[in-house]
Length: 155
Image (cartoon, rainbow, N blue to C red):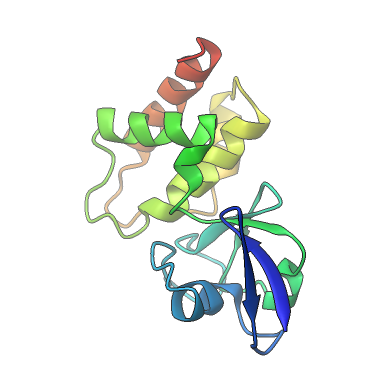
């Protein structure tokens, strides 16, 4: 039995320790906000936080999450950074098709949790593993900058 902490709640899974975390989240725990994109950790659609760090859940074995805190898109808005990012995403009308957005939001939230005043280079580096086929990169960057200002103002 594998013990996890997912979105602040304990979870026990009777699963193969080598199963990708993505499938445990989606299939076993029914947390479907985390998306499957490429299966090779190249697109970022499956990004979740593992002890506060963004990871690609499609290539992270379930065993790597054992005993750690897993945060998914379903609860990222419970943090100040996540709430600010989500509000900025709406304000800047970021989503088009929406498929990559949970991964984008997870990466952006991890960036702002670690760096309250990211430079353009910091944003580019943090978001470089997230692909948006609709090309909303300008809106994404604007939303991250706006959320950073909001966080610094304590909003």
